[in-house]
Image (cartoon, rainbow, N blue to C red; front, side, top):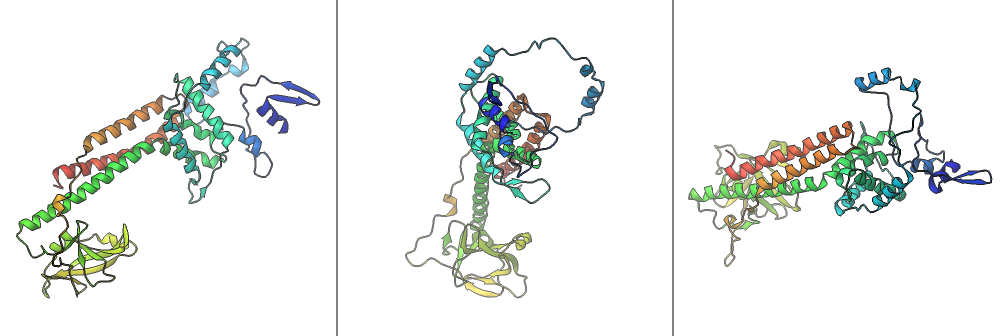
Length: 398
């Protein structure tokens, strides 16, 4: 292996006391087994940049071609017409060095490196930290530039990155998991964009629903709660309960039944606010599935003109003191004027474009394309659900 390391690194073959400089352009090796740990072969293994697992022929059509191919019995003796001259090779090398690496590709590389810290093993709950040396990353960048050059570009594209998973695994069981990491990293800008749209949509829907409910309550002519203090636009505060930081949604409070021995109470849940653990939130008509979440408590609820009854115990509501001003009414809390339909259409078109470009890459296999399609189908579902929320915001829940 020391002899081979010198050949790879310095392109020198040392034969006894003689040194022979080799015009090495490409080194291809094959083995029936991979280097085992502890045998001192890590340095040699690290220098093989592209690693391909070659299994038995899977496609029947290809299998038949292999059976019927008798070219090995009649080896060609003529020179290859596609042979690359030394001059062409030198010119290509010079052009490849001039290929640039844009910021979005560097960002994607960063996302891949972070993903390699915890690679999920197939059919297992175990995760593995896959180490890739700096020297290896340097050579990967050269490979990316070569891919761009072969495709006739002067700048590396995100589409050049997918095949690099062949350069990142050390153990065979890491290969597919790392391919998934690379695919996710390629679509990070798009998934972040969609997540931002979804978050804004849900926020607008929340404001819209609460505003609509409050408007209905006001139109009903019920003025008895006008002096209750509104907190954060959505809540009334329950006094003398717990630490004094208990709140109930305005809409839920307004819709509660009057305290009565005849009528069954309203069911609800009480839980710690995930955005402010010191605050306790009460929801009426809550989904019973929420009871499975840690820290939730099932409660019964009534109300009267001035109190909230929690499990039959009466608690006063926080009211405006003399000289205290009410927060802005929810009607002043605006819904964003974003054009969600255009944003979602743009995101979908960008994703479709990236998928097409990946399919056109010479070094992306059919199996790679299938994996991309599987992941993109998940992203497209997120877009579809966002369109549902968009329609709810535009036309209501009907």
